[in-house]
Length: 106
Image 1 (cartoon, rainbow, N blue to C red):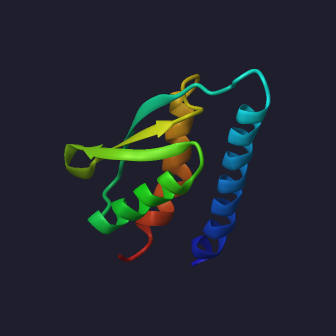
Image 2 (cartoon, rainbow, N blue to C red):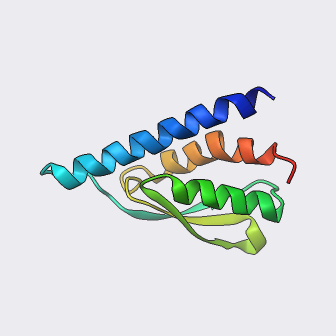
């Protein structure tokens, strides 16, 4: 139950930080963007949970979920800031987004 209270605040912070990073790179010289396509392995999620996860990823500025492979066991995600350290973006999605979605009974 605690995760249901925590996640909305976490997600609002993610959206604000992502929007500020993109605004900084649009308005200031010296681009920090390093786009990359990531393959994010997923745990056991039902189809609606995968849909929710894809929507959350896509609504966060700087990332977009563009597909799934291996019958839903892997997401393909485009990240504007993951080129220099793709493993950290994958770990962030798996540590913060996936556990929340896995607990939702949909």
